[in-house]
Length: 180
Length: 180
DNA sequence: CATAATATGTCAGCCATATTGACATATTTT
DNA sequence: AAAATATGTCAATATGGCTGACATATTATG
Picture 1 (tube, rainbow over the protein chains, first blue to last red):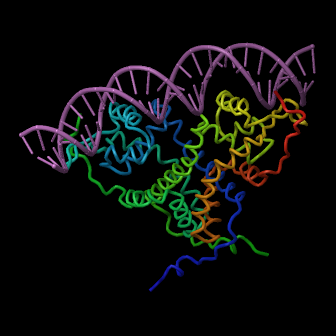
Picture 2 (cartoon, rainbow over the protein chains, first blue to last red; picture 1 turned 135 degrees about the vertical axis):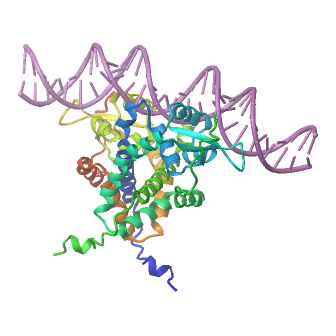
Picture 3 (spheres, rainbow over the protein chains, first blue to last red; picture 1 turned 135 degrees about the horizontal axis):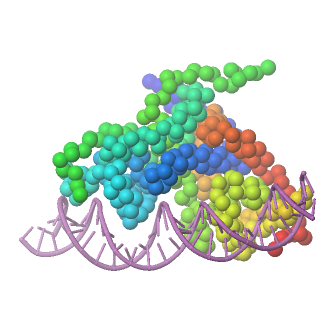
């Protein structure tokens, strides 16, 4: 009967000062800054921006994602998403399918072209993370993930856990009933 | 004579799959999304945006920061910074002083009003991090910081270490020779 | 069944923040 | 004296957000 104390040796350490925490916040800023800059050059070549990348990423990782779910993830309005999504669809990176249970829904998928772009954009970011984690043990990776999860709004954590846990569990589009 | 092996038990763990790493990347995205949204409401009240916050943060944490250093941190052009900085100066949140060694330089400082804003904006973000870290031990905090540092571009790490290590080490402005 | 609610899309206008390019000033370096 | 540097500014443009209004298709409800 393993209880929490087996997994998490409390050793709480003197509560951090504000300055300590601000240093961590700055590391967070710099890491994110460099992380998202990787795919910029590739995106610029095809006339896309970071907004397109975010959509390609989440649709690629979560095929069959509903428009409303994507809006909740990105925290933008449907009008903002609309433009980006239309460009991605018009240029053949993303396709839509009617929901089976609810035909109002538009389930989003990447085309083959979209999957190729997704992989190409993700490669340098994956490499960056892999390099970063390679220098450390598995405990560090787990701690990193755990701190990130705790930083996320408490109310949103269940949805994030569900999304991440279910990555790639949805189906692939039937070419038959693709919308538009 | 403690060497690295005392501090970092290697235990490399099977190299993560791309999917594992992508899950981590998504956690990173969600954590950053929530982290930066904290001060939005406060900023909107005074007609400022996130760009103003970034300037207030880095000037507040690193008084005497040069314009060129701030440009390098934010990775934006001087024209972009110009507008934001002018607004912050015009409304009395930031002041400038001539560099002593090099009088071309403009060293940036927060006014009292700026410091009050800085503290107010930082409070929810500090609280968020403190809560996140409180559930874990000191090892987790160290691992989190280490992974973030490894995610940062290798070439930029020395500058980041210098900046973070030297937080608040610079001086305060002499009211005497404030520029403009 | 009629009506309400929901999921999505779209038009129009606006705002914040970024870009490039050109040029100006003050100061320091060569 | 000339070149390089640090900063500032003007103008035009692009990206990616926003609000508000309205339309369509579909599902849920009284």
